[in-house]
Length: 95
Image 1 (spheres, rainbow, N blue to C red):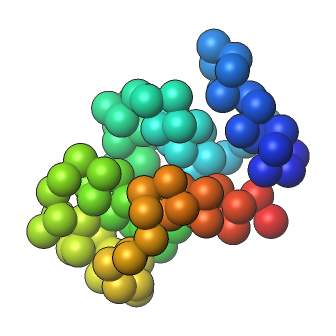
Image 2 (cartoon, rainbow, N blue to C red):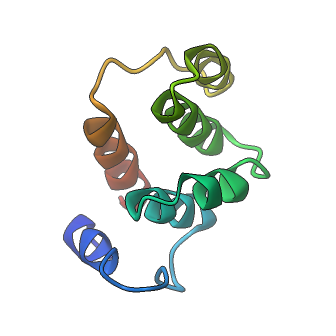
């Protein structure tokens, strides 16, 4: 699946069954369902999940918590817009 196919899948009621839990969390966020995205990603223990977790808390407005998760991912707090950060993470995970 490429990025355009992923973006187009946001028009559907459910995420594609072939994508990873990481991309599923970002899919729900792309649909505006922050809560479902957070529920999925909070139980995954790897650096990509920590980065997504950071992004979600940054989006929520909880910068302190976001910074914790960025550090857990081995990254610094993003200076991108939220849309740019979402796109960057999705594209990286799709590649």
